[in-house]
Image (spheres, helix red, strand yellow):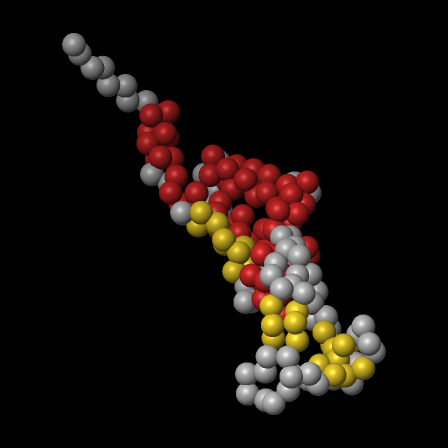
Length: 160
């Protein structure tokens, strides 16, 4: 048995590229995360709510908090706590005040502020907007553009 070593420009180029694969993958992951975040925010519910007097307050706490993170071991969505209830839904449950004697809120269904001792909440259907956001990003070629840009820069020796 014998080995023949070939020293040429292609071998050196490939060796050099292999040393940068980790950096390229990290760039790809970071840029994909940054690219997906606006799509998530666009697809998330606004979450408007009312003051006791019936004045509508624009929502956006969940929408503005969202960030899609793609990492070495998977991906996840980070954001405000209420995202868990929006995405996963809730079962019917009783709501009671933590410190006050009564709850106080505007109830659009009856058109006035109410102050019950407790509320039997009917629960919420889940609204998982993540898949729609990712699909929209692919449909608009955003993810493909990131991949093409990062890989082209890597193959041509340019920085990302």
